[in-house]
Image (spheres, helix red, strand yellow):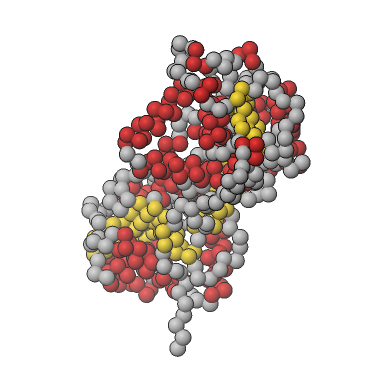
Length: 503
């Protein structure tokens, strides 16, 4: 008799840099339904294998765990939990089960392990309450509210089945009780495919380390998004010079905000632009002798190979890039109109985005750039995105992927919506979510550095999509490296950033 192929493959850790598809909760439900029909295997086979994968990963992560608390909900996710509990009991573990429903018929004996009170000690917890189907807020009327609160206030390790219960799988919005994040080790085992919510908004705080047990059967539909992964930049010829590596003009840096423009300009130089110019729109408000101000931190601008552009150029070359808005302040609409219309390639940040939000005519200018196939990248944080879409910041965060897509389609550009799990979207509706980075990027000046980084890559010939993805991914990697560096390294990095921002 032939041995049937497993429905779910062995779990593997999802590492930053790998390419993976991401799905909304609705897409994952449709995928699950279609696989159950096309495979010809009953549901008990699927939930049995899912339960065994949960049990195997639990013991692989914490092999010495003896008392294991398993929380089982009302749907297929709960069935996964019952089968995980059965497998763990067969391995000799003490199993404590909190369940909203009775066990399935084939596991009736497991009812003897159900408890009514909240356990006070356990070595490992498995959360199999709600899976990919949750899209509403969990309230006091839900029996599981106390269980979830008890789970998340404990410092012990916890493994979530598919998604953390209380997390919207499509948006990454936390719908559960107010809980502190980061008390103990957290893991998520995604089965079939990964949900978008694991990687953006509040998802990364609650999901912890993500593992994936993929289906051995192919997905019938295209993924709703993709994880940004590592890319290799094209090599440069040794026989090269600065004129071949592109020209970036940073527009911004008015009086009192020169540090923002300097960060963007220095970032463009650091990341490979051949020549970098700095233009402040109103020369009367701009002093090139920055280090002469007694109330400012010293900044030796003449030692930096950043050239000051006194007048806006009448002609630009096809590969020139304009990084506009970093510390620009209030600038006349007519000037922005000239910059937006004539820049061969454009990166818009900060005050450039604010100008777009204030003047509908400028938005039309940017949109027409896309129709002419002129690359444009915008890099809003959630508040700037809300201004552009005339909504609240909460509306942006409620569905970050959808907001990024709306901006890209409205302005015919590449959108980089910054935040936890930065979302990159194209006017075609493609979407990517970045898995790298941490809260060290939540500091003044990070956005300026990112804008200059993207500008440098555009100047070197990368497409707008690749430039945005590569810059976001690599900046996140830098922050992750700093997080694991020695405290002295972190202090030095912070001091350098602060000195630049004070200038």
